[in-house]
Length: 219
Ligand SMILES: [Fe+2]
Image 1 (cartoon, helix red, strand yellow):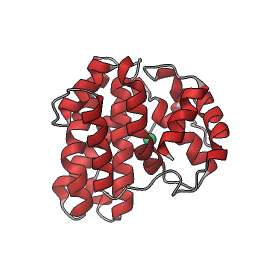
Image 2 (image 1 turned 180 degrees about the vertical axis):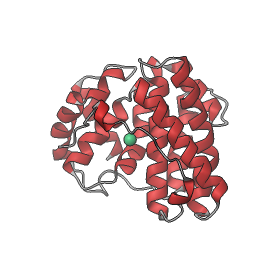
Image 3 (image 1 turned 30 degrees about the vertical axis):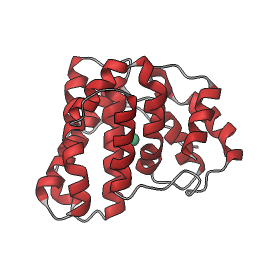
């Protein structure tokens, strides 16, 4: 089981945000942690606890990640992209520490507890399916996200296709089934997701059947 530990004792007095410490991350780790940061910013932006200040950080992180992540994966030693990703990761963290997250993380936490799966990979594989489910409940916000990514903001298909191609392009092109999730695991995974605190701030309140259906689509 994977649970979040939240306490003021976990908050550092000072943080050093140094992109040079990230240049030795390999391709997979760069891709999965980058997709995690993207999920943080998207979930914080559509969270029902978002507000003006978290919006500024979240949208800027989305803008930077869409520009820098594929290049950071392809050119691991290029400091321009490492610096971009470090900054975006910080901004996404500021946004979600104040606005919390949503269904992608609720489901990813339950996957991470049951299986030996990289957290960012789990998020990346769920993101497009959760967007599809949430879209009617936060349409304007998803349009803004699409525009921050350089898209037109015309509807769900454009954003969902972009996210799928984006993650596949950086090597996250598997399915949950490839990572060892089976149809039989879904009821237990959905139950754990429903109990995860991140689900509270999702823009749409899902039923357990909804969560099961989203897991099934990502298989
Ligand atoms: Fe995360």
